[in-house]
Image (cartoon, rainbow, N blue to C red):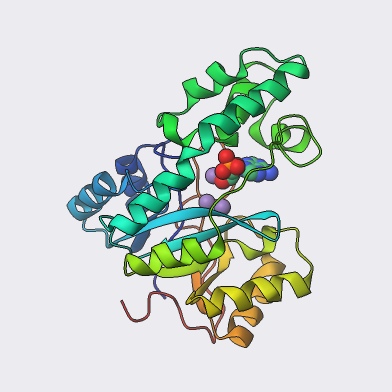
Length: 276
Ligand code: AMP
Ligand code: MN
Ligand code: MN
Ligand code: MN
């Protein structure tokens, strides 16, 4: 079975490594099909492809798009995209456009909670200022000694009901799937087990996604417990979706699951890469 890892982040979004460093790490870990999927941004793909080519590592161009659906944030991964597609690029630029203002509001809330200088502090952790996000704020809060780790920051800050949470309107599901399809890619629902939906809402999401032309779902991801693999294998089968696998690796210091180290896809599924 192919060791495919089709979900990870470089410092072009909220990872800590360069695209070329990720390529080397994927190769060293035995990955044999690799995608870089930075949040709302394709700027790291050229470096990633060049590094992967030099290593003889088969590469897939990807992106992870932030979407608002039923008032919650959902992530849609695009795989095998043409990153030069204008519709995709303009769409992603529009999604990134709201991040600076949101960052100001996050910093304002943290200021009221007694934590000064968060905007500038988070920005220092963001190699790509257009992609300022909660992870960069979390790293700043660790650096400032507010909490010992990013995981612990996300328990007490930056999430719904806690200081530093700013409701935000991302792309619509229709836009995200449309941009990915415009770029010739396959749309995949990222880590479906992580959303605060009931089973009914989740099925409604998948239904809308499929009607829009989405065809894939992550079955094995770094953000699951092992019993969720079976659950989403069943969902993929019942809904007739292609199965994907990806670590969602963000960096050696922060990610529990390293590139290429996940269990294989459960049997009986059609892998998203089967016709590539
Ligand atoms: P943003 O797109 O700015 O809202 O940031 C979302 C990112 O925050 C995700 O892609 C994760 O990298 C990170 N994140 C969200 N929740 C958590 C969590 N509980 N623990 C660690 N990282 C998280
Ligand atoms: Mn992230
Ligand atoms: Mn995600
Ligand atoms: Mn991700």
